[in-house]
Image (cartoon, rainbow, N blue to C red; front, side, top):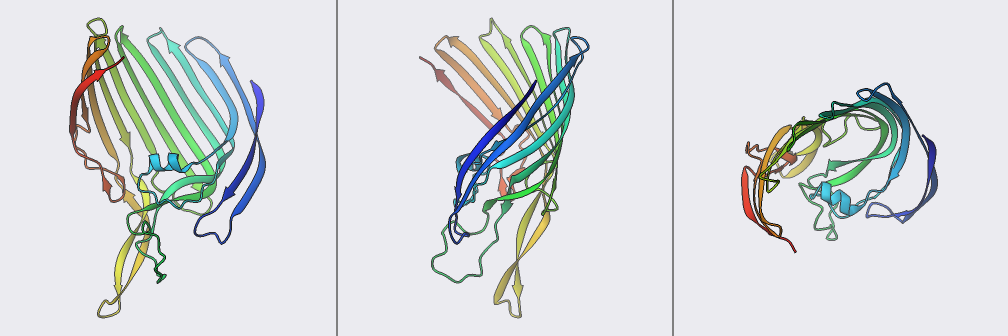
Length: 291
């Protein structure tokens, strides 16, 4: 497959930091190519190059980080190129796998950085949201290396087991580390149906390694401590986690079913972002009515 794509961006950026609105009109070109060599059904070698432009909207950013302040500079993330190669296959129709590695160059990589605890500007016009425990979108250029693998296993007619893992490392131009992005993430799941598919049982486990983040500490200056200043730590850590979940649903009628969910059954007190812990173990039950 050989091809290319073009994007035209007509953007206007503004926020409180900018003295005036900035306009950005630009045309982008991205390569698209892929080859595959099928040595057999079990082994298919492939490789290629791609790229693209991803628009970052405030709604999407807020979905990913609900502790985001509202005044954000929104920039599109540009993948100038991304080379990749891998191996995929289907073994006896019971085991499917896909493993690949890639390297790319990107501009305006978006991630979340913690905001300062306070501002030194003495003004009554300070926004009400601009205080501690908030985050803002941060952008930087750099390279990205990724290794990912996924598999599906069908040991029984009514049982599906799937798993995936991803290694993602950024080499940024201005920042030593990317904030709030784990180096390794993974998941494992299973779904089993019985009683003529009336009963569905599910399992989902999500895993992630430690994340680097920035944080601020409040320190007193002078004696007595009448003046305070905040000091930034650019190499703080947010611990990794393992989150295990179970689900069950029984369809009594085609329009009526009962269900139960068990979330974070290990009751892990991990943090999504520094300072924000998730809920412990939760069990939810209910009914579903469809028309």
